[in-house]
Image (cartoon, rainbow, N blue to C red; front, side, top):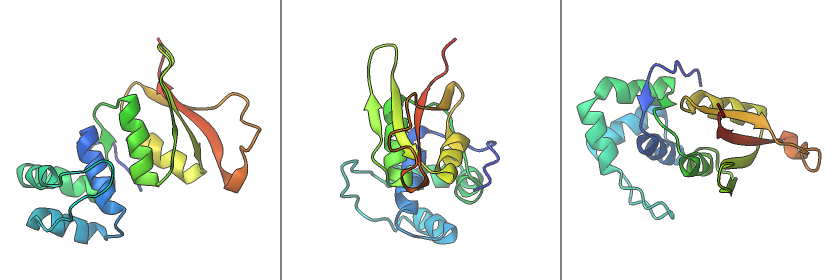
Length: 152
């Protein structure tokens, strides 16, 4: 994906797009189905309501199409939203770390997965190698990373 980072999506719209993308639809099919309102009922734990994405596609058709075809950056991330995005977009089960003052997401990512995540993160977040990642770090070509707020 060659995200230009010019297209900005809400965290929720990004999750809706990635949920539909996970169904194996081409970009063109995803765009056509959303615009036509021909969307499935989501039975995942997220219980996505895709009608919101149809409304967004009607209100901002160029933005929606560019986000699907060229990539996007999320306007504002939360730690739980990043956790959900990794689950939905990458099909992984990251760990949510909620210690006060050290909130983060820990995930084992391949190089391409890391790059894809980095391309969508909002300003104020970064990805760094997890300390002590030697144990299991090279499993299936994955490194262990922390996705955390940038500390000032």
